[in-house]
Length: 78
Image 1 (spheres, rainbow, N blue to C red):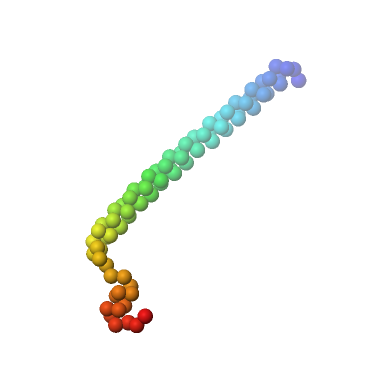
Image 2 (cartoon, rainbow, N blue to C red):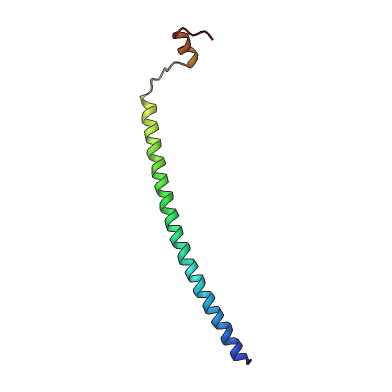
């Protein structure tokens, strides 16, 4: 094989590899977009859950009795 043929073959392999890497990069970009969207959705759900918990906590009385005080009030013996 002449050096031109060897060079042409190497260029062809390089072009094929380049196309393969471009496809892989495109797939990775799509996957990243999906994962980013999922992350943002989970963050939103987490913030909503935090807000609901904060709202529930704010509704609790400030001087809530402890379990032992509740048991004593109900006549239970420790």
